[in-house]
Image 1 (cartoon, helix red, strand yellow):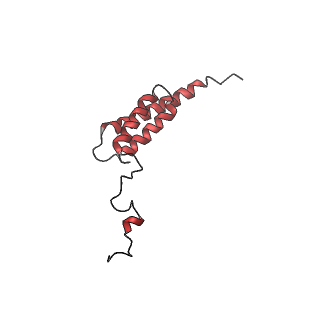
Image 2 (cartoon, helix red, strand yellow):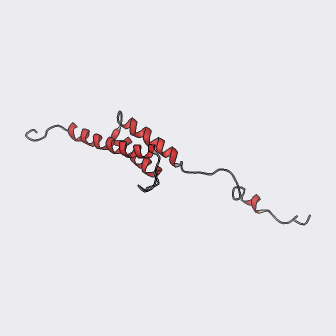
Image 3 (cartoon, one colour):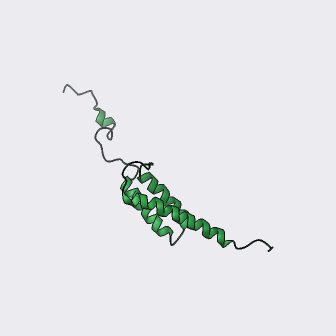
Length: 103
């Protein structure tokens, strides 16, 4: 009866103390695998889009730094994503054809 008029803080804010699992961003292992999948898929379809996505996911999975030990999938995602992007740019540049001397 002593706490009759007092409200507990956990009743007003149910998620504030030891609540549930509230994560909004994926962890680095998931980002590394997503980047690796995007890099491999970029060799076959939409390399101009999936290449930069693989680079970004791999870079974020590595902790935005080249220092320290890193897992293999994020590093492979960055390298393959760069190759994907470069090949897609070369392919797009060559798809225009020769323009000198023609209308």
